[in-house]
Image (cartoon, rainbow, N blue to C red; front, side, top):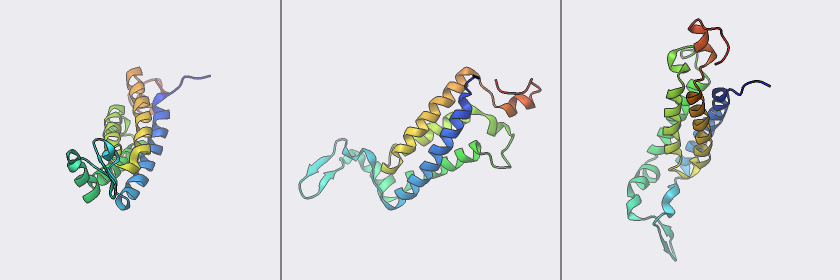
Length: 156
């Protein structure tokens, strides 16, 4: 057996979660629902569950204007551009940096957990976030980074 490479596994999970997030954000444009509307909501007989007044900012950003869905889609596209590198990003320091991916995934988790369709994307983004964090703590580097620094090659 070999050594488990955390950042490679995280890369595949992150790509899957980001594609799912784009799909969820697309459906979030048409079926807008604030996921946490049941917290503090009022149950009315002819109207169902009505969100509390404290959720007004989220209702505005998700239901009235799909700002959260747009930001989630943009963050997912950015993560895909880094994980499945676009030709102009391939081999750059930005593409090799694992800490940037941890930060972007944390931002994506925060955005996806807010709207109803993005909850699965948030769960899988969290799994990728944990794996990238484990890779950073373990000191892993991408093979390209080791090759460019004149190391022995391979993965650390």
